[in-house]
Length: 386
Ligand code: GAF
Image 1 (cartoon, rainbow, N blue to C red):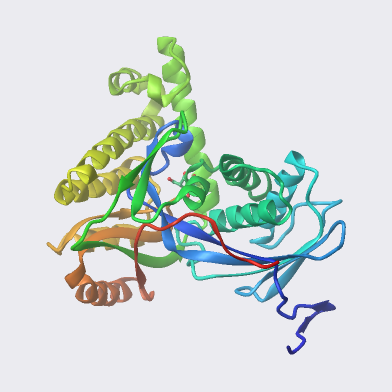
Image 2: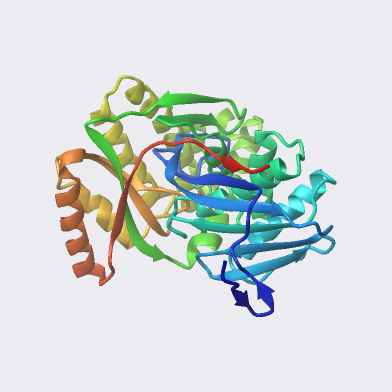
């Protein structure tokens, strides 16, 4: 094997003890509802991060090598501080959270590569967090269960990355099941696997390849706007501070106190929750036409009421409306860029992608990319040696 040195580090591919795969996710419907005690309907996808691990014999020295970024992160477990480079904080955050929960972590080497488009709203970040936590749990027999892995991934993002995300992405990455989406009640954390085979329709993702600067600050702002709106309503009616304990009538009656922005945010959350539950009924009844309509309504809410869309996403959703083979489309994930999800007849995929790419390029001078996906298994071991 040929030695490869980056800086003073030997980054030759190593013989590993364990190989883990951790998927990204889509979300059929239910956006920005997770941190609002609401419902979501995500699925793990057939794009994932692959992570190979080995115990390196050191007590505290860890190396994490990313093939995509061609860089190595070296961590001393005795002293974990926030880093400066993008993906480092996901890793550092996870290591820090594991250390807070267990004593069992020791030095390891990890190399990783991914085919999940990064920064595209399909949660390459949760895949990384959960793959790392899951792999280390197996490697060092830390005794964490799946929900602990989900929640520590979320905390890593809160504490080290700075996005006050909900639970959906980590949940979908870890709990995903082939052929199923998952209805998650983000208040109780109860969930149900929903068979999601749409044949002859398929799930097509169109990637705007834009990520507007607002993506972190806008996300946190939305969280603040919805929760401060909720507080006003809950106080006025003396009900618990949860979107599950208020009604649209209450929101309407508080319209003046809420002001325009908070009014829009709060009513969106309740409407989106209702759409998720209806979507599940339509999926169960194989009524894809009604499901598709809900996707369009959902996007309308995200664009006009929650204001997390952007011109590129709106353009692609509007474009799809001219195609009868597309039953529905909407933005996916945190918003302000990333992908649209389209439910489209399988025979129309190629011509639709060609036409959308041409129109998108003409309008924005940006290349569109696309991929088809299917609901897939969650984070899992691929191979173990020894
Ligand atoms: C991001 C967050 F990480 C999720 O928790 C969720 O809020 C999503 O945006 C919007 O639905 O992916």
